[in-house]
Length: 364
Image (cartoon, rainbow, N blue to C red; front, top):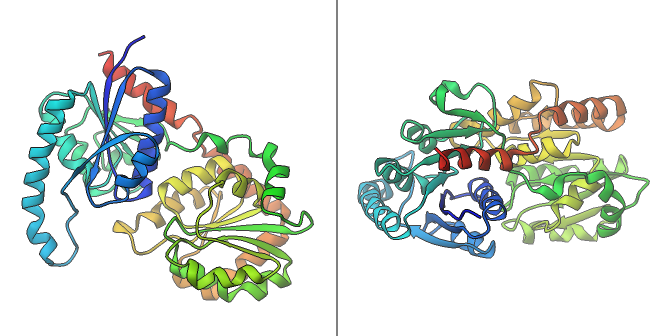
């Protein structure tokens, strides 16, 4: 059995880290004797999440450019130079057969150096509107795996491969987990269940919306699984005392949360959108407006334009949320239509497809 040496780089947010971990897991399953090393930003969440997943990681002293003038921008050229030197040292010592990037500024120096040294390189872009790091790297790397059509606007067309985003394999066949999910969350099977997702840290505006609509949801006899995020747990845990509300800072069993849900309210990060396509439940996307290039809105539009989800911007929540939600919760045909259409957009074998592309580069 062949063995290889893989480096994966990406981070800053879970949207870059978890796809990299999923790819690493598939690489280890396919090539069990291989060595895997991660490279990330030394002060970001990947330094905790990657070791928790069982992999070694090296940190670079790197950060992205700020949109306004700050001392951090003054330090950027120094950090970049130091990170390039450290990337050279990592590559020289580890001697990878291939380097894979999943986005975020941490992957920039390493992928550039690897490409310059002739090491095969591949990047995976999760969003429908790419970040600046991957746009720049696409000119250097051998292949670009993407999750959406139409990205030849940003990347060299001859390098593009439509694979989708890696998703958790435990999200497949959720119908078989419905009974387990009802028991796990101690739900009332006679009531509709609304799952609210704001990301691991939480979404302030989404939490404010849910808090303001608790009586409205009660009148509709809707029960809530509310993932408020760890930043907001102290503010919202008090609502656990309400009969129809469960507040969680984090959901360890996302598969059961999805299985229990009749309707989902979610931000529109790339990983969340890809998961929800696989899950196939009616979704209301409330994109965060506070991300670069407003890419969450673009991710949500890529789904809602196929009549596969409802998109409500933050500024429209006060005026249209109740109208949209009341219509959805009372219309089984609309729920079925949204579920059917979003499921059509799912690329369930994304991780395997990406590793297939890695394997082709290795065998060139």
